[in-house]
Length: 166
Image (cartoon, rainbow, N blue to C red):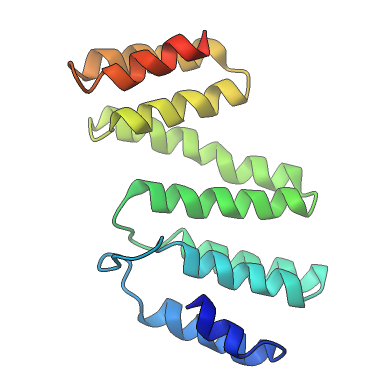
């Protein structure tokens, strides 16, 4: 898709139409190459490059809002879309907006763990997110839950990450 967009270098309207068509026609559940959330992200980044700050609020945020509503094959794709949106807000000094976007992620991780559909990597990512925000006790509790949920050999990655975190 990126190559097709580059064909229209210098013609932002054609580039936007190309991304719009791709987002409309690509089924993320059937995508086998790349990251399905990357289409929406690339489209929003294009808007960031070619529009004013006000248009960013109108266009890029609308695109990200749609990107986080998509039914992705994996939770990682959904989390990637949320993270990219938050990073965009941070790049534009909208720190409060970025925090508001990421606060539901903690609730999402909790739900994944409660439903017992978490993988060891999701446990590690959740604990890492908490550690990054200085919630060390909560991160340790997440590690404890992960250790209780998984048996050997799947728990090995969690133990390895715990030992590196201490």
